[in-house]
Amino acid sequence: MDILKISSLEKTVTEIAETAGHLWEKGWAERNAGNISVNITGLVTPAGLEIFSNSILYPLSLNLSFLANQVLMVTTAGSRMRDLVKNPWDYLCLLQIDASGTRFSQWPDKGRAPTSEFPTHLVVHNMFVQTNLTAMVLLHAHVTELIALTHIREFCSSEALNRFLWGMHPESYLFIPEGLAFIPYDLPGTTDIALASALALQDHSIAIWEKHGVLATGTSVAAAFDNIDLLATSARIYFMVKGTGYEPEGLTGNQLEGLSK
Image (cartoon, rainbow, N blue to C red):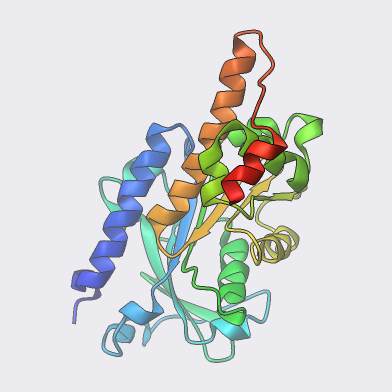
């Protein structure tokens, strides 16, 4: 059985490729920035799992027991989103966590490695299963409009960012009423930032790493992208008004309260 021809997987790959194109076009995936992972456990048949039968088992730095026997599709290290659009299977790998949650096997097993943000993807997906969240996707991108906000000290908290973003555009409140989570700067690719991200994403569908980038979750890659796109629109409105020399007024507290009703 050729796993590359499973129709359900092809649909997921197509969605990843389309989203990669959107990220590149919007300037949110410069060089090899951006990475995506999807839990595809329910899409792979027992026969499809045979691709891992002769694979090397690599150790994990954490015990991810809730990911035991789960299968993830992950973009590879160094992948350029602009290239992934054209040849997605050249920039993706499949990973299966073993029954102990302490090791993983990979396909293809040579010439590719998972994204450098692999620890965060693993820990967040482990949290999804542990907490019974319906999210299946984690998307990381360098959303310039949102990163720029975290270079302004007054916006460096979840409370300040959310009040501001909701105020710039009512749709951001309607579709993301829980707001986003602010995660203070930490070294990318580490266990520390992975654990902080998983904690933040328990109650939020989107989080921002200070001065770095955005994490978005969803039941699909498109849904995760939509939330990023929406909040980026709010930030653009702010910068456009500021660019004309005016201070953005934003929605009032009463106007936001009206939206909640």
